[in-house]
Structure formats: C-alpha cells, structure tokens
Amino acid sequence: MELYPGVYQISSLFGGRNLFQYLFVGDNAVLVDTGIAETPGKVIFPYMDQLELKPQGLTLVITTHADLDHQGGNDAIKRTSPQTWLSCGEADRALVEDPKTLFDLRYNHLRKDHDVGLDLEFMPLAGKTRRMDLSFSGGEKIRLGDGWELEVLHVPGHSHGHLALYDRKNKAAFVGDAIHGRGCPKAAGGLAIPVTYYYVDIYLSTLRYFEGLEIDVLYSGHWPVMRREAIRDFIAESRQTVELFDRVILQNLERNPAGLSLQQLIEAVANAVGDWPKDSWALAMFSVKGHMDRLEQLGKVRGVPGSRPFKWQLA
Image (cartoon, rainbow, N blue to C red; front, side, top):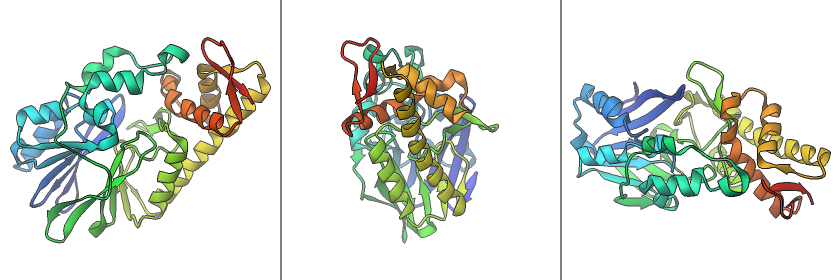
C-alpha cells in the first residue's frame, strides 16, 4: 500500500497480528524491518516486483530492534542482494546478528530463576546468523532525495537499541514497537499479546520524547495507522498501562506478605488488564520483570531469600 509518494507499507500476518515493513524509494531505496525468515521471499520481494524494483535495488535495510519478527529476513535479503547494507541499533547489534544470542539474552534469560521463556522451536523464524554492515545510535540522517531524508531516532524501552525513523518533511514517524498502548492488537480486532516493553523508566522517557515531536501520522510494526489525536491517546494509554502495572503489583504484594513469583504477578496484571488472550500471558514476562527491577531499585520491593521460583515481597 502506498502511504504517500515514494513510501510503501508492506503487510502480512504473523500470529494473527499485522506485520508491517516500510519501503522508501527515492534516490536511495531503504527498507525498514524484514519480518520473519520467510517474509522477504513470500512478501517483500513480490511486493517490490509490483513496483518494478529488484532486491538488488535496495540500498539499506534498517532493523528497528531485536525481535524475531523484525530481523528474521535479514539473511534472506543479504543472500539475494549482497550489496545491500544491513543495519540496526548499536545496542541491539549482538542480538540482531545472532538468533541464538537473541534467545539466550532476550527471550530466555529468565528461565533459570522464574521458569518463563520462549520455546526454542520458534528460533528458525529469526533466520540465520547475519552480521550487520553498520549500526546507528540516533541522530544520523539518511538521504532519500534532494530535500528528503530520514532522521534516525534512538527510542529504547522495548529494547536497548530500538530505532525509529522520522520523516520531518511529511511529519511522519515510523516507530516499530517503541510504543505499546495496552498490548499488541490482532488484525481482526482485540488484543493479541501483552505489552512487551522492558526498561520502564527509559520507556516512559521515550513516550515523553514522542510527545515532544511534531507527528501528524504514526506508523508502527503492528498497530493501525494513527493520526494526531489518536497518537496522543495511544501515548497516554501507554503511560496509563505503566501506572496500572505498578498499582496492581503493589496491591497484590500487600495482600500476599509471603511474596509472589513472576508468574503469579503476571497473572495478577493480566487479570487487571482484562483482555489479553490467556495463551499469551507469558509474554508479559518482559514488562512485569521490568517493573519488578524498577520497584526494587526504588526500595519498594525486595527478593525473598532462597525462594524458587524467585519471589518478591514488599520491602
């Protein structure tokens, strides 16, 4: 779908959710995200054919962040078009380059103490190991044509190296998964999975940053296109969700002085939100653990010595 002259949204479905990539075609051709391992062959390249643009015409591919549904097609792109440069955020580089590192350090690092993680059967979706040609830290500009460029924004919270792209000329922001609302929606309506931000204070800082940016239209990795008032409401809902988590966690710990495990806290938060599908609750491990880390740093909770699985109680 053409969003505006020279800018296209490429869409498919993954787990019942929309999965979007974005293609900018000017003097340079830039692709934002590559989906899962099969997305280039099944979706991206066929769409480019319709534009009479060959894969070898891609100048640059930008992975917004370390997640299998945003980086999985990197190897397929590079094998098809070796001259295309692959890139990502510097702080996410190790996870984007190697699926095993992604699973070890992002998806399954909580297994030992908390018995939560992502099954390794999903690893093939993340593609094969593929080194990046360059990385971004925010503040860079990518020329698309005379008077038209993309500004690279560093917007962490969901991951340390999360990137967004800002087209100042058209007041358009391409934010990946940097903003979460109350959860990621299904394409057919309703919520598909919980919020999956991790670093709470940094996430809140990213929300404030977007509020200060002049954005007329917001494009993301999975959410519908949003404009003006809808953008403000989305950011406000995201902040309210953070506040709800803190409130529910502290209330449940007060009612359970012996302490609660991560899985028990996930269940409490999921019931408070009310409309996450139950089979997706485990993915709230990221956000709930992020809140526990933050509350522990604030001195409001503490770990229960010797607990297994690990538990927290009010400090």
